[in-house]
Length: 274
Image 1 (cartoon, helix red, strand yellow):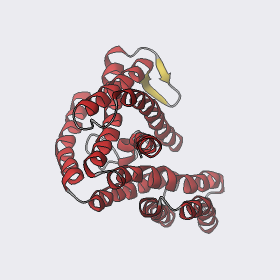
Image 2 (cartoon, helix red, strand yellow):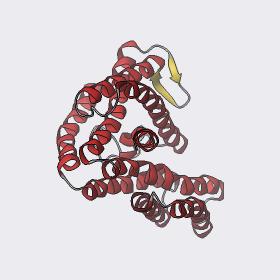
Image 3 (cartoon, one colour):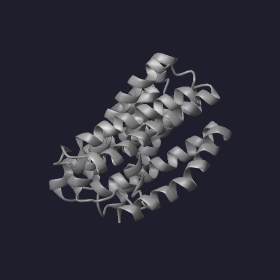
Image 4 (cartoon, helix red, strand yellow):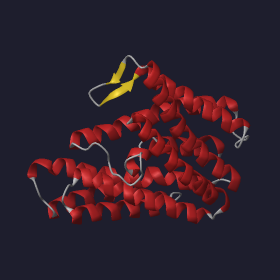
């Protein structure tokens, strides 16, 4: 079963990665954003399917709110008034939706919090990936996108193999029973390797003295993002957020760490590079 799942993952990656890199390096910035926005809409639907089960109207409102947040962040992220308006209105909209679609009173707090949290968690954080491509010089921007993807992928892959072959000590059994301390260390090692490769191969503008701590921080926070999504699924009784990607589950299952690593890399470029 594990070998079959790994084969499905590799087959999906073999098809998706070249197309993604082609769009990233040779397509327009807005084209890459469209892809990110579509992925965000699917991820938002998966999130609200967990927190608002059976309520298609509330799920649709949640997806539209996440998309609106993404559009605001992509086009107006330098406008403080727009960003402040976004932060202030998101929880109000979430409250109004639950008042409109009351449902089971026992789950209203969960649905209000999810409605306010989802647009920032999925809509804003995932959009930082497109901002890297848009706001930085063309090839540097694409390189930093690949770095963000590489930190998430390297951490996930390093964690998988280290946990599978060396894992003995549980990391956070109540949330994710299969994750181990050894896997976490392997994840940091995998992300660090990807950052070093980035420096020497496709992102020479990233100093090695920055690449390594960025990888460590990105990997550790990305692993917490992974645990956070596991917490959401466990609390709502869901095994996978979806089934859109063969061998990978849903979009949220694949971008749970990337939501964090992309944000970390983007903030690094804003505070240090820019």
